Image (cartoon, rainbow, N blue to C red; front, side, top):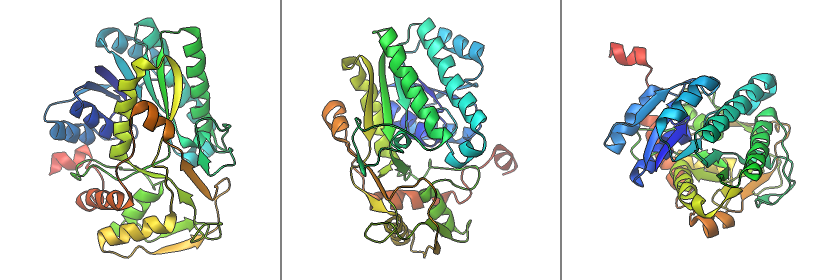
Length: 344
């Protein structure tokens, strides 16, 4: 399949583009590089053994999106593009609603106008923010505690409504939990532009000396070691889940949600210890107050994906730590910017 991959230069997108090539598909990356690097595209092309087609554009430009869809001869779309920092979304909600919702509606309009009816959407376990359970099936009640999560929830509702309006749509809503790790080559990985919002890149940057210490939010949860427990899924497994969903969609008309997770939880301190073993370095940390809205434990029930997508996570925490450290140690400052490359 020829697959338009929005946000394909980003962390999860770049790994999925490589997985698509390895599965025999033809991905085309659409990215505006607001939160990603052209170097990621170059490295994915290197790993794939062929140049990946790239379109530099912004999904907020409806005319450009329509033109791309009209000319692209696409069979399907995987939609990663969007803003994703919870804290920033609380501080700048209008930016998040405008960017994430309008860009998705522009994309759907263009798909509808040009007869592309297969979509894999990058949703999030944040839609379970108020579920009140520690293990989430796709059928638990949905809700959210921040504007970022609200955009994911609203988009899921939009997709449901679009699918009801036209039965020719095939839409996957992939709710994934905590993506971590990197490609085993160490060539592509997570490269936050600012202070990391997620645990693993922060731990990585402490290990490599970019950050002084890790703040662990809450040490008094009712868990084995008092720290929060989450479902950490290796990004390569997550990429494989997107390919599995894409390939299964012909058998699933309408819009359907699938959890992508391991089904197992690890605490924050277990992640820290695993990374210490992988890196051979001590990770300094301090326990600080809980963050508002955080829950003690949140883990996926991935049974539906196993049954319907024939997919399951293959990699564990040790793999995550090893591959994450390989990426960070080989790229201590992340991807080089273009100015650095030109002067090298």
